[in-house]
Length: 331
Image 1 (cartoon, rainbow, N blue to C red):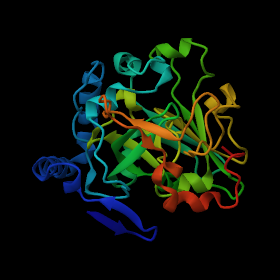
Image 2 (cartoon, rainbow, N blue to C red):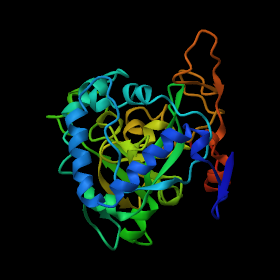
Image 3 (cartoon, rainbow, N blue to C red):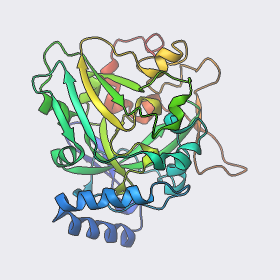
């Protein structure tokens, strides 16, 4: 069953289409109870996550306080990827280049205290603690596809709210055209930074109208739980119509600028990774096709690859952002 809501006409699934009703209701009942004392529970939940984040195959890390009891903004009724797969098969080069490295190594990441600085061409710059960010807006669970440029994909229920909530509070100047997301780069806690595979810190960016789109999200959790270190704790970007590397993890600064940011992969290999990085099956990576994808968890002998969808299946919602652009030139 699909429900269409809001001015954008987004389609989203009801919880019973994704998770057995009994299990889903138990989780929501727990979250409602926790929400009553969310300010104190926030710290408790993060302490619990830090204590368990170093395991290779982690279990869930505790319900994220203050999350709303509705699923909003979601755009797929596809079966979510298994939590274990989503939390142990990751790209997070700060903790190693193998897909299993982040789950092994990210336990060293210290996420408290955590501060995100808002800077640049804004009327209200400032520094937000993690608790400030959690109180900024009601959190929602959104079922988004995540498509990676290597040819694989996942379906993940993210927990957070639209980036626009923070942007509106910052009050960008009229000259601000882009939003730059700078991530944590700490040699003491991130062993992968000693490699020369990328320039650090990892930087990503969006046009300001892309960042303001309701689907662009600041995520603090997934599967109704606190975000694991290896998935970008304590706060990450999720831009579901772009390849996964656009969704920067462990964000420490959000900067508003009038110039297109120099993003990590575009600097490292501009012939392979463009600034926009929209999922487009008509634009192949120089070394492989992007016309199909492998869904993680569907690895059986007879599992077929899926056809890649334009804008990762979100063309109806975001296509207007690129009207008139040559999407092979601006890849």
